[in-house]
Image (cartoon, rainbow, N blue to C red):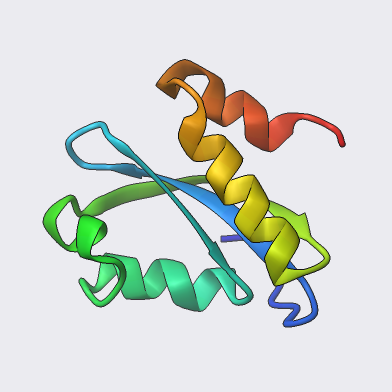
Length: 89
């Protein structure tokens, strides 16, 4: 992971799981959260669908903004989720 830990920022992140599924979540410490997923201490979904890799992350100024973005990305079809992380506001 190359994202620095900045607890003033919240991140929307996307993980590819070993079965090919995608998992989206938010955190203010990207490195620690991914490590928790990798060790089976993350979300229930990633405990049963272990992560393969972090696809990417996008910073937000607040938890509320990151939560809205998480809801938005979860509404998208699979093929548009990666593009969502790369779009400009």
